[in-house]
Length: 66
Image (cartoon, rainbow, N blue to C red):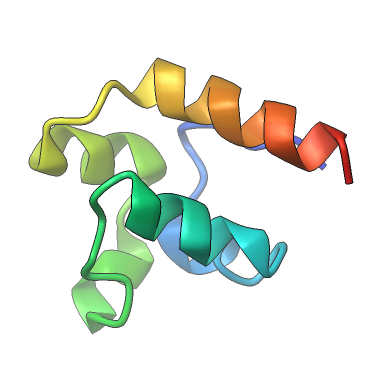
């Protein structure tokens, strides 16, 4: 499994149980909001002022070890 910044938040949180924890740890505390489910990871990062490429890289590193 590989995370890409074009993936929707709704897709991501169902891929692996670690993903919601990683997103919350990055500062995305609105995962339960229905509107967030249809946002891409890139859009959510932009709204929260998070470097998306850095987050995607870190998430993929963690998931590669699973």
